[in-house]
Length: 195
Image 1 (tube, rainbow, N blue to C red):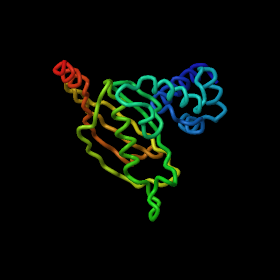
Image 2 (image 1 turned 180 degrees about the horizontal axis):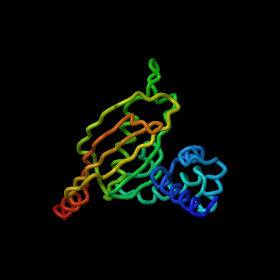
Image 3 (image 1 turned 90 degrees about the vertical axis):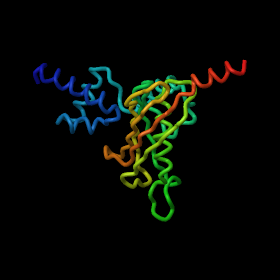
């Protein structure tokens, strides 16, 4: 293989992993139309760890950035976080999270995942949800691994407008728009009035 084809594949591999860091070697091989072994060799050459190690490293880094919410309050597992920009978390739907009669996941788990991720993205000491507009799009069953992605679309003073999409196998099952309010300035002003 010529080195130019290899360089192009390496660039493509980096871009694919930047866009979706949770891609497996098998998925990457299929997208790049190469063998799984080629992907593994490319990852080693580029110094990219395997999926489990990437996920663990991302989760550890993300949790150190949290401000508005404690890591134990996150519903699911926080994997990536850039304050005031973007956050990614996952939630595995277990049998105790579904309705007994239908086997469909209780909606409040998806809401809680989206809402706690929206709070996590805010760069403030204190924040709360002011408005939530949600849409449940598809039912989810036990065993599903949901990936939530929160994006701060804009900010006005102490209000953060955040869009959250929750997907199961790259198919959107839930989405929400939140307005999260930072209470940092309000808390300071209240404290000053008391003094």
